[in-house]
Image (cartoon, rainbow, N blue to C red):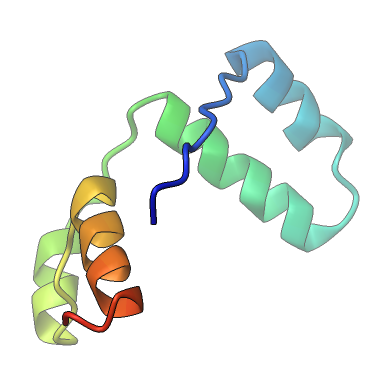
Length: 75
């Protein structure tokens, strides 16, 4: 799509603060997900669960390439 994507780096401390301060359950969950990702957490059984439900796990690069092709009418 020929657009640059800005990468934003957020410190672990800032994510922890966001999680502590969140009062909305959705925001608290989102903060917890970001913390987990930042800490390299692995979801045990994710591959098996994806296969069970017919979900194909992809990298961000694979998703973006497919999304771009779809938007261009290629896929």
